[in-house]
Amino acid sequence: MESEGELVKTERRLEVLQRLGRSLFGSGLDLLYPPTCLDCGAPIATADALCSGCFGKLRPITAPYCPRLGVPFQHDLGPGALSAEAIAEPPPFERARSAVLYNEVARAVVSRMKYGDRPELAMFCARLMHRAGHDLWGADAVLVPVPLNRWRQFGRRYNQSTELARALGRLTGIALEPSLVRRHRNTRQQVGLTREARHRNVAGAFAAHPDLVGRLRGRRVILVDDVITTGSTIAAITRTLTKAGVDKVDVISFARVVVGQETTT
Ligand SMILES: [Zn+2]
Picture 1: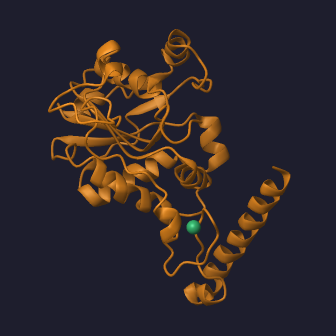
Picture 2: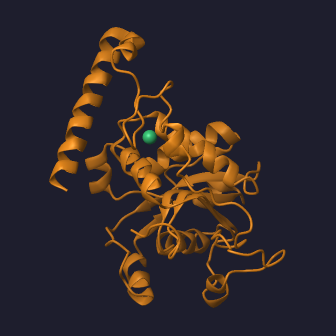
């Protein structure tokens, strides 16, 4: 782990140098410091994000999947069939969709996006989310990023969900409302908590903008997140929005943790 940490530091130093170089000398410095795959570090032709080998390790979530939770099915259960999870505990949102399963490569993408030093990453993820959420896009919708708490936002300089929402807005033409929900209380990590504890942890953590109903005028909210882990956060935000007068909430994320498939957190 020590050497991995050192490697990350070295990579980060290289990137800082690259960015400094680009700002001083323009993109000509790409010749000296070609863009690299953020997972394996191999040089790549364009400053996208992953080499073709690592891109191939992403696991896109495609049909068949649960129409409510968006979790993939092993077998096609027929049109409209819900997952056992969605039947046992119906989510407050209408539909959740995610581009890929949360695995090692997806984790590398998400963690680098959080530092904000690869600005092209949000668009890379948004392109995959655009495809995965094809049945969500419509002129009646508005994109709302899942808010970070202030302390985290300060540490990371920006909210990666806002960057994803902005990129999705460019691809879909759907308007962005980044200040519709705010987090007014910090929450613990949800992973490892029981269902009741998760519910308590996020209950009352979010607040809707007081002008919400007027600003939305009956439009549907699409929440944008980087990773859906347990789903408790998006459920809590949905409840907050519903209480404030929003009729319908859908969710789109880049990655989704699916227990038993690929990796867990
Ligand atoms: Zn690679």
